[in-house]
Length: 368
Image (cartoon, rainbow, N blue to C red; front, side):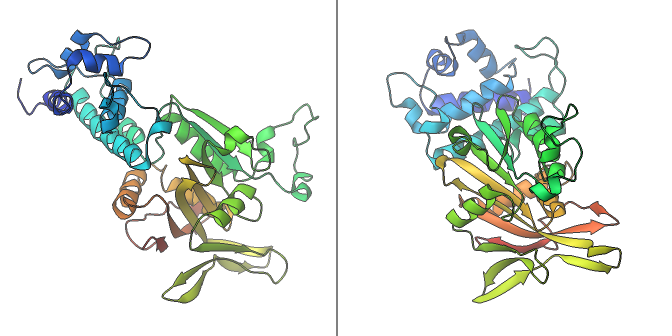
């Protein structure tokens, strides 16, 4: 087999990881096993220099955990640390190694016709490759909680099927940000098949919800988690949402010692009291959770629902998510807490996905 064959390159990388740590195949088999060690011949088949077999994704996840930190090898036998035991730096190393191995596996699968742990194998698609290494991929075994606000009572009373005792009651109708929620929930489930993804109202979170990975959709006016978190985090962005007559709505940042207000753009329309939205302003932020330092919180928040949807789509839209994810990795690789304030265009009633790589849609970045 050609040494540049993608299957061979993956086998060489796996063997190199083990040999660099000077551990044996039986020791690695023990570390990668769950209730019992893997078979040594299986490990050997993945490292074969003549006819390597391609490990399934779950086993490469195990490799990433084991080889992300030297602490895996502190005891008499190598072991896998749980994500809770890892430092932030170790979790970043685990993510980077997992992405590298998944990319190698994707290339190897295109060159192979069999897989030792599946009955039938097909080449891994670009979509699967993107999902398995993208921004919204969390380590297996984690719970992800999406948080939305409920509609205010005066709005809810005007909507059908929102009374709990109505035979036709539809609970999802009581949630705001439905476009963003529908888009994000499906993407999270596809990217995290081994993780639990929960949906919660902002005012109904349990203690376990608070300490999971949180994703908060919507602004400070209705979503208590967004408002509480933005008060606790050191973000240099503030949202003002005064919807009373004569009030203002904008995101405020400090640039070069001056306060700058970024407002949505609306076109006056006699038939609509608020006008027609042409351009929303939205915040995307990722930070260490103030409720559990070993978990994260992500905020997607527009002045209007269109902005929230656009902030979500930036990292779920198949045409933009990879380039925008790479943008985050490039610009904020040394930061646990960061944010982007963006413009979200609405053209003929359609919300367009922001492209963070061009500079045309980005209003403010922090750290700069």
